[in-house]
Length: 122
Image 1: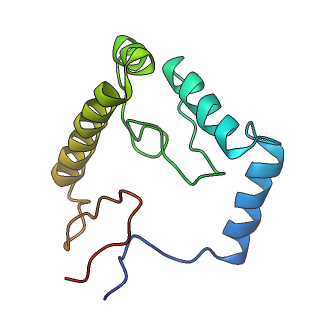
Image 2: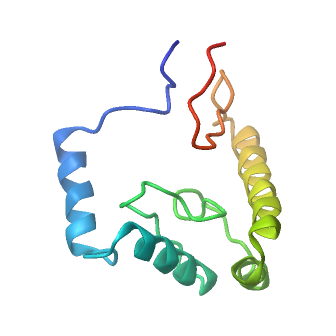
Image 3: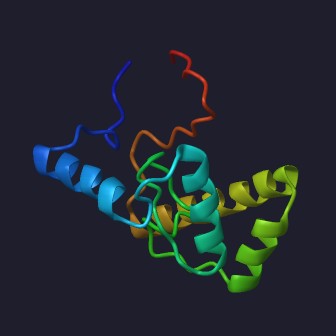
């Protein structure tokens, strides 16, 4: 199976900066669970931080893409049930994909959405 063009190995400098962001950044000293809670709290307040411990974007990808989700939508997500959050995540993903299509940044091979399981061979 071909590797995704979006997945690449870090250079030594990128790896050093990544490790420094975990050691010295706002996520310093946190467990994985603490980092998830912290990232969500900060995002709801309007502070989009990429989680370097989990390599995970904010729910709306605003830490890595020029997206601005209204404050009331962030707050609604923070107070939502898991099921409601899943629906909103789909909405955020759809918005990000639309933006990538409009800007011409959508990969030619499409997008793979990970759900924690191993991808099937295609």
